[in-house]
Length: 308
Ligand SMILES: Nc1ncnc2c1ncn2[C@@H]1O[C@H](COP(=O)(O)OP(=O)(O)OP(=O)(O)O)[C@@H](O)[C@H]1O
Ligand SMILES: [Mg+2]
Image 1 (cartoon, rainbow, N blue to C red):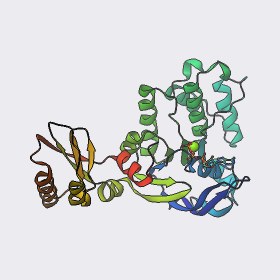
Image 2 (cartoon, protein in one colour; image 1 turned 45 degrees about the vertical axis):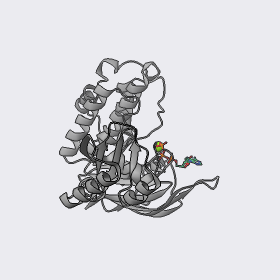
Image 3 (cartoon, rainbow, N blue to C red; image 1 turned 180 degrees about the horizontal axis):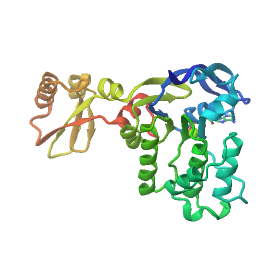
């Protein structure tokens, strides 16, 4: 069973902006899924459609085999969404907000779980303050607690760690990892690609409203990520027209004293040799050689062509 099946979802906003174009992707049950894309790609639009705060223009979605648009009440009890925008009633405290939220989902009060959430999200000492006294990072953690209060099967987090400092971010991810290990499916967006690579076992990349890829993280990093051979010289390099033509097949990139050339996929030995010999013939022997494997950020930038 899949936690989510998103089929041909498109969104055209009232002003004519096409935010999503025919997006289809599957979130397997139990996965830790990264939905990635540059600013304005359409991530929040998709999440807001799942959360029922934006209407899709077309397409359908099923959640654990149930039609999300037709069986909203059933689905809402099984999903928790952390929106990107923060909005709370400023006069309630975190504890009150969590209690009300459980009630809203039709769940009985569970003080023990509310206490655990306050503790794990490091809000316990602020549990009685009114929310307008909380800092931005605290409010975001309260949003996370609110999304978890009814113990959903699927948790969707839109930039949960924006404005959360590095130590807290680590602890928040540890908590998400525990929930995932206990069987909760997690779908998140983040601009921290290093964290996404480490945490997530599935990844989708969208850009300008279109799906670029959706696959297991291992497949992306194994089949799509390539490695580069980087050669250092003792003087800044300037490639001649001839160098550029001869090395064109290896996508040469020059940074000061260094020339980086792309190897095929994992960089087999024969690739390494061919690339090295070609570079040596054109530019002479380098003073240093190393191989750099593309990480998720490199792959993301290459696929989206966007430095954001
Ligand atoms: N209510 C709206 N009306 C019109 N256009 C909108 C609306 N909301 C979002 N957009 C546009 O739709 C596109 C997708 O926006 P969205 O917020 O989904 O992107 P995102 O991937 O979440 O970006 P970010 O990483 O900055 O959060 C953007 O061009 C945005 O300006
Ligand atoms: Mg967004």
